[in-house]
Length: 220
Ligand SMILES: C[S@@+](CC[C@H](N)C(=O)[O-])C[C@H]1O[C@@H](n2cnc3c(N)ncnc32)[C@H](O)[C@@H]1O
Image (cartoon, rainbow, N blue to C red; front, side, top):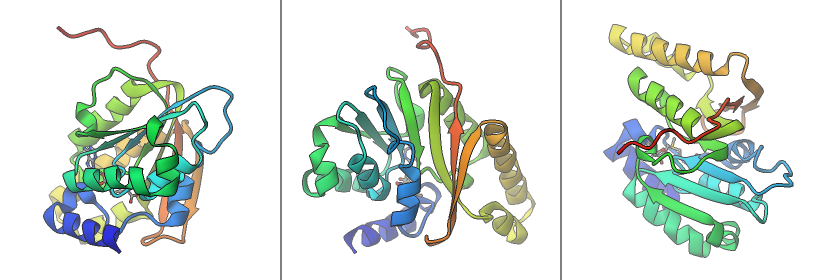
């Protein structure tokens, strides 16, 4: 209940960045952690963008391999506090606490120092401007190791439903985001899951990213 209250407060203060009225449910969280749960012989670096109160994070933490590291990037200060608390008290997160880092910043501002094998995103892309979505998707590409997998969700048919009642400018924004996401998925989506048991029901997209073989040049 505590997490639901936190979410409600965030929705009231900043619906645009919160983007959901309740934390992701168990089935959606499990689907988001799908590729983290795949066995790996090598240690992996995993990024979760927009972990919120940690709904998906605890499922990711539960399936981390012994050499894996998880970075959580969250912009909302209250959610960051809650994540810190959960790192001490929530059993799957506490068990992996030494390998989990919480970074209080926007994903757009995350330094490109590390590359990730897996990126899980809870960001509400459908609430952002097309330019913001472009920046975020470009950032994921820069943060990804070659052949990294990006897993993210969107509520089923949400753009179409919103567009049906929206004015022209909003329809154009939603159309622009739809085209960006189609471009991301085209030829790269390796699995799509439909999660009916969530409020609201959601699609989880798993996408193979090209990734960056090398670090970008250092800017003085
Ligand atoms: C839809 S909620 C998802 C929360 C959680 N992953 C879940 O599934 O319950 C979106 C989250 O993304 C965070 N967020 C929004 N914009 C962000 C940004 N630019 N950088 C980092 N986090 C962001 C919000 O604060 C919120 O916690």
